Image (cartoon, rainbow, N blue to C red; front, side, top):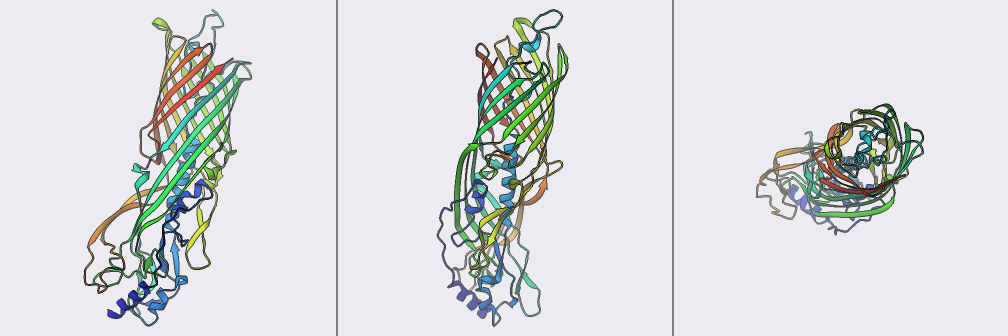
Length: 502
């Protein structure tokens, strides 16, 4: 046993202390990876000695476990980065947009010439009304939304814990002829701040009395920051004594005894630019005084830079159906108008749906920048919305909606789940009791692990008010409230907008 301690102590003297520094990411997609990149270039996954078989405490043990090239890196941290990138891309693609044709619509009964009920309501805000704006008419609209994502699957983005379950085989043997030792579990913490601001301008034109087309172009501001810290490998004191595990099986720094990393790295990135161009075509297929049905489709073109979170990086299509009901005008010109939309969005392959891969560095088995990304399908999204407009005369309308998205029925979205491991050896570092006399205490560790591709629902409540300021100039005020904790969550999102029909 003394010989094992001697070799471990000899290796400990070779440990180099890395200073924490901010890493400059080349784009928003790589902020998370750069925050987890230590100055030495190593992604804080678990380095495992796999290249050369050696016996714990054997004659070549010390040389083998202090040679960095004998280690390979388990890049488990990449899974978390890929899950968040896919979540951000999906959030971008399903951000509710202020309806491009929900303004003033003048409609008269062809028999009596009287104004129809649909002329009283100023339309919904996020859902699409079934009516078109009329042949030769224009609608110009502008809206602003600010999203501050603060949670991921119900946990604060500022304090996520990532768990490495361990249990992978190494090339270190407990004794000659015995089975190989397996890696110990590990964890580290992650704090993120993700903000997206979207300003979008819409133009709608009535091609015929039953068909209109809309074009929208957003300007997006994306700001992302991340910090990785508190890395721990649950290997006791790392000396393989009195119930401890040897740091040589897995370590934060290849070829050196590092089982605790209080501060690992941080990174941030901001960018403003044009987002994805949206084209919408809608036609009224059924129209009666109290019921209107419309069919339409959205085409989103990848004009925004996906790696900067300005766009989703692929073409998306979304066919939809919109239904509007109208009551008879009540007292004081009040009209009740329930509405319902349903659609299904399909996306192609994008860098935000692919896998980020670190490069193997020449000086050791460490992995680090540059990071490259493959392309993968973004999840499909089945959308529905239902609500009601209450027209308070012809100058103002109150709107309330429930918006739903079922994400990933066909192409799932990468996600994580929470796992707890108990009976682990509390990490005490390699500079503790060199005799190994103290038996490490047993602790539990909880953190996020990969759940593969899944499907889940996301739901919002929307409350808004529309008012005529002058003539056909409208102002829209709205608040979007997130009702669930699935994926990325921006709990409360304000919206304001202006629109003009002519």
